[in-house]
Image (cartoon, rainbow, N blue to C red; front, side):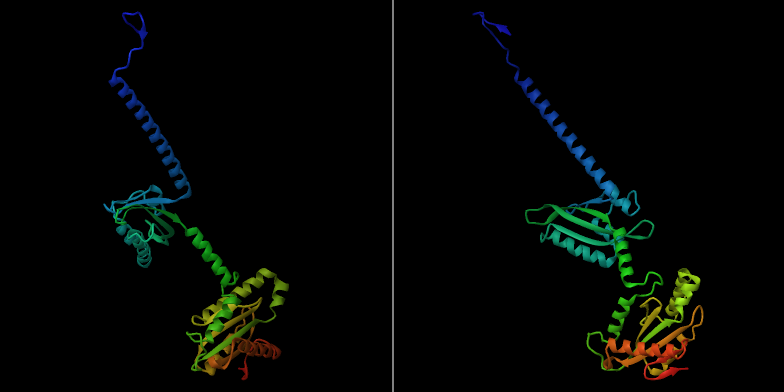
Length: 333
């Protein structure tokens, strides 16, 4: 407070410089608070990403600079990598065909056709192995002309999901005990064998063979020695079939103690009869009965071929088991 000649008092005004300094200090405090809040948000985001195993990368298209987060590097088993361009990183660590597909999608981002791209592919790791990842990219800055100048992306490890999908796919197509294809695959392979590659009946040049194999007195094995021994017998027979019949033939377990073999390229009846006869010679760990049938591709359908082979198997059992019968030819051997 200051006085004047009349005796009145008034407050002294702050110098202009002091007011400006106080405003500057307030601005600095506000900026510091915002920076602290930004750092907190950044720390929370990094923690969340680290806990989920998601890697982040940042590509400055204009300068060519490419940055990867620690989590992104860790996915491949690295702590650090030398400075590399975006293209070099992907050319070196991604399968060539998959990189071409991924790059084509990214070109759409670069040219302004889209702001987002996603692709799943394999990445080579430090130990020489590979993992599956999904990469997602988003354009965050463009020129006035629409060209992307900065793209940020993420990498998510999908190896476990892919392996689980593959396991479920395998289970849907195979018998879990013997590892052979199941009845579903067997039927599909038989239908395919009876059709040419265009889906039309073949002109009859080659024949298709079908063999049914039934284990003799298998129920007695289960009853006398238990199901564990029965499983061992099934696996042993399955291994014999796997050894005898390789692609393009398909050996499958189609029932409890019944197996089926599709032979899509049978050259002549004698060769087919020999294959049936050799199967019927199996005696260990159990004897088998065999029924076979062959037809030209244009001469039958799957149902007719199955019926013929099943009838032949029935005849083999009636004649005393441990033998082979081919449809329309009577007993072999």
